[in-house]
Structure formats: C-alpha cells, structure tokens
Length: 274
Image (tube, rainbow, N blue to C red; front, side, top):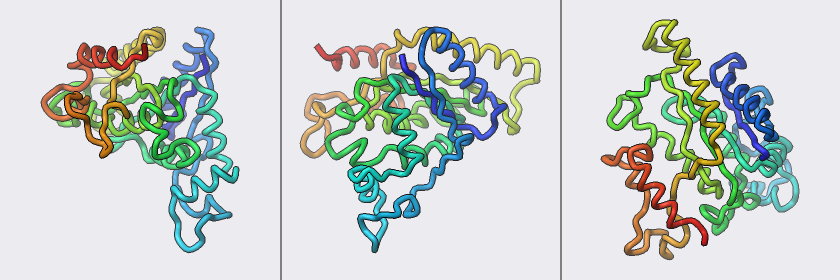
C-alpha cells in the first residue's frame, strides 16, 4: 500500500516527530511504500494569497476559489501545491500527524488544506463528500494533546475530543476520504502544565508508541467513521425525512464515536456498497 504521512510539527525532536518516524519504519517493515510530507522542514507556505497567482483570472479583486480554479484549468498551480497534490494522488492512505493547538490543528496544517485542496481541481459543487476526488482512499489523524485523557472526554475541561476533531474529519470526508477513527496520545508534556513526574511520563510515552505500532498493524481491520452523503440529503442540503444523520454523535449528550461505536458500525454497514 502507498502511504503518505503529512507531518506538522516545528521540532524535529518532538514526540510528534517520533511518532512519524515510528510509523514510517513500522509501515515499511510491513512492506508498504511510505512517503513523508514534512510541512515545516519543507518550508511550506500556509498563507493563501495573490502572490501565489502571478497570472490572475481577476486582476481587480482576489477570490481564492476563482484563482484556484483558473490555475487548475490552465496548469499554473503553485509548485509547492502541485507537489503536495501529487503526493496525495499517489497515496492510498494519508496519515496526518499533528499536535492539538488551541483546540484545532496547527495553522500550518490548516493553511496546507486551504491551499492544497484546490477548488476546481480537487473539488467542485458536486464532486465532494461521498463523491469526492479521493473517494476510495483513507485518511487517519494521529493527534497529541497536552492535557490528559480525562480532560478530553464528555464534559472535560479540555473539550470533547470528538467535537474538536470533527472539523478536520469532516473536511477530509468533504474531499472524499474514508476517515478512520483517530489515534490519540494525550498528556504529552511539551513545556506547558505538568501532570505527572518524569518517570511516569517516560513510561507513558513508551506505552503510546506501543499502542501506535499496534494500531498500524491493524489498519486493514479499521472501519471508517460514518457520515451522511448525497443520497441522504434533499435538494436543499437537509436530511431527507426518515434519514438518521450522524451529527448527534458529535453534538452534546451522546459521547462521540467511542461511546457509540456499535451504532457507528451499524450505520456504516447500511452504507456499504452491494
């Protein structure tokens, strides 16, 4: 299998970097072809703007979607965007490795999505969701947090991790990916609050790495998170009568995908092609 790891952390000696290195070595040992896109090391520019489009479709105003579509149609996408798209197109599985910063992915990764998921080239008004460009390919977010596990549960002070990851998961689904349940490493002390002594923290890191190796060994058994799709919506984009959506799993009072795993899988069964 061809696998791309999109790595987003500024420190090459960070635990995130360690997880990326571990994933690459583990997957290669399994016989997979692994490519790494290291956004900080590559100097990727996450800021979308006019400077990326010297030959503009509209000279008097800057519309990112208009310029992305024009550049896609004329073969003039920025070089770094072309490189990242080529990497995505080669991959059957994309792993996103990043820390949770301010309750979301780092700005570098958000900017990567802003620029690389180009309108016209990779999605259109109809070519999205379950008919998206990357349909049939899988995506997995491997995420570290500073706070411990308990703070990211239902009602925890860190925020329910299912809610926090919903935007990036839904964006990946928007592009057509089958989104696998995330791998989470909580309580990664990186200079902020300290929750345990150094010995216990070191032991936890080893446990996290072991869990990651185990998860990577079972990728073929992973089932994607379920989402509603084109057949579930009416012409106004609302759920058709009688169709149960999956948003309630992410909204209050349901506990997210972990607490509702069986219902998730049942819902996924009814969406499997015949």
